[in-house]
Amino acid sequence: MSTRVRTALISTAGHCKVACGFCFRADRAHGLLDTATYTRTLSRLKEAGVEGVCLSGGEPTHHPQLRQLVRLARQFGMAVSMVTSARTVAEVIALSQVAHLLANVTVSADSQGAMLLGRTTRTAVSGLDTLRAISTETKILHVTCWGLRDEECQNLAALVSEAGVEVQFSPVVLDERALRRDGKSVQDYLVQQRLDADVLSDHFNLSDRYRAYLDELGDLQFPTDGGERWSCRSAAAYVSADGDIRRCPYGQASVSAHAPRAAIREFLTAPAQDRVTPDCAAICRSASTCADDSASCAAV
Image (tube, rainbow, N blue to C red; front, side, top):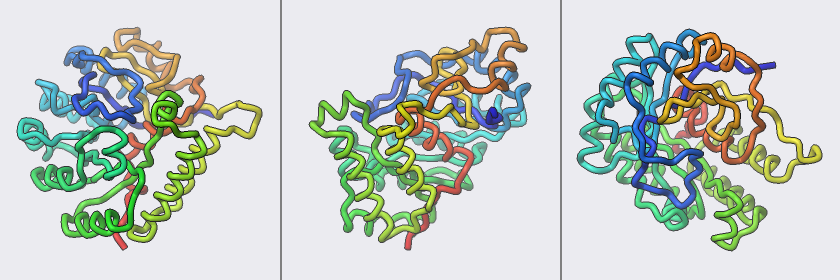
């Protein structure tokens, strides 16, 4: 049975200056999504029943026609959300100029351990500063977690409560190359994910969904059915910065936004052919923040 595609994650800019060491993006390049391709893509997505889009990247605030991208989607009757790492003055200004047109904005941040592991500077404090500077009704701080400590979580709980924003968490997801680079086994990092969840639960109302997600990641790393992973069940399509439409960023099957409309509709409505991997599971969960706040956590 195929899952109907309801939303689309759109990469507006291929390049991201943050360059996280644990980045799980499937396609990294220097191109920008041109508005003609984007407009055609929106038309085909709408015909296939897609109800909303999430603008991502790379970094969406680097797109010179960001305001036009947002307005075009709204003209097609789609809800528009954004996932961003905006921190610089220029990035925050670009975000603030379209924020009132967005259903929600998710600003990415990393825990102290994740910043060290990924060589980033996306602090929760700077992420909250970005959210305070914009007028979007629903504001979400998304924190990638690794090596959490009790004091860090206690401070974070106080900060998000004071700021009045939602907070969501994801564990660091490492591929085999990253594991080898950091001298860790798969079992090591699965254990760390559980330890981090235990610390989080002391300060936030961590949902059962989060624990279930960790179970899924473990099952993907150590499949119990002879190595056969389950078929893609995402309700979100993915559009790359060059206009390539896939059911998953890591999927092998794709269709160009410039293909005939019948071919695009058939691709989006047919059962997905791809199998779920840890990387794409991480992206799907992150993408869900654009249209689904059920994974949000309240401070205890």
